[in-house]
Image (cartoon, rainbow over all chains, first blue to last red; front, side, top):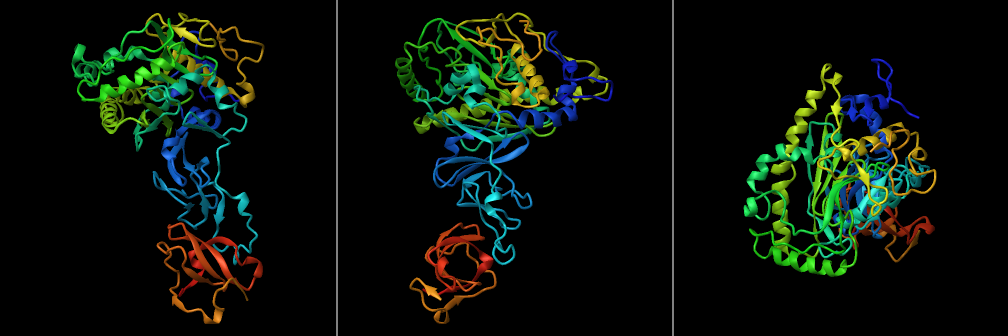
Length: 473
Length: 82
């Protein structure tokens, strides 16, 4: 059991994160020792989103990704198999790939020219015969590959920990939610591709500000996004007063903050009161012809799922522990880059088979909305960029953050077992759920301590609190 | 000397013998003499300036004739006229 001990008195992590009262020390967000512990305990262990198969369609295709602070190569070898490798030469550590994406027969280190096939094997070592005397066993010096990788409906996930549970087990009640995010608009599985390239930029703020806020902090929107709401950046323009989001037809449902306290995954999602899918509502009023495509694919989807309840699917955004936020139109990755720096990545799904004018229209919209120049995210960045330095001071750290919104006002629903629901107004339950999982990961000696999460028998659908952490709702 | 139909070593016509062959754009099918004396035919070029794959067509080590291996540019002695 790893515990964090601070010099100013002996305190462990549970002194810093009190979920019973909803009070969390600022040190959790600004302390360098805690951050170092996060890299090992969380990023060395969890399943992480690396990329998407559409980024490596052909043999030899590669694209760089990140797992925690470290750069990885997502590539498809000559036999068509996808791999994720650490981007570092086994000889002296140089990056073997310095392009963001491309197609390669081999990855040749520019330092001493050790060269690796796209399946990771070390295939070439200069002077192997005349100076290594054929004694270097190349089979032992291939690129470092992740312990487990999963292609989940086109999305590529990986973990460095061979003891991590299967990816589907890791997702728990969010399995279908993730599947849905990679469906085409007509409901076809793995029916999307990503716009290229990814947007990447750095925010001077701890990674948890973004990662733990998204899909769980709608209370900020009224004030923070007041101006962008007025600017009417949505595809419908100023119709119905404008807004940021596309128009949607009503459908009988109950929306709420839904979280797996046990697994740390959360979402702002819905339980549906009837099977099926909502009608399409014309919304791309400024982009001629675009609604025609979406209307047509929605009809196909409605027929496909006419008799199914799509609980926790079909709309809303969600977050897969620890650092991937997504919905059916965007993916937000919050990579740690030092205790006070986040490397933020944005990628956007679009139907593979959509016509060009639809892809172009959607790209223009997402770029208005998201990313370093998107005017909605600019609002968010301003908050985090100032909150971080304002939390660094010796005096500031005496005053904890407040996570009490909606505390103890949650419930569960048998239709979505294993999920806690907060639906009585804005709630910070989804943020608390991630902090709960954060403590468990930071304390755990191995996956044996944190999975399976219900060791003592069957679940009745009610979430429990975690290892020793109160389960009060 | 075991061969796979190539000319004997003494009869090879060297057309390009710089110190450190520039191989990046070398087409597949090119014949090369290596510093160990082997004659190889380029079957694949990584086009990174460092490495290519060659099939041994002539060698003093009979077991290596017909095999393919990665070749570092510094191992190349000369290009041989086809």
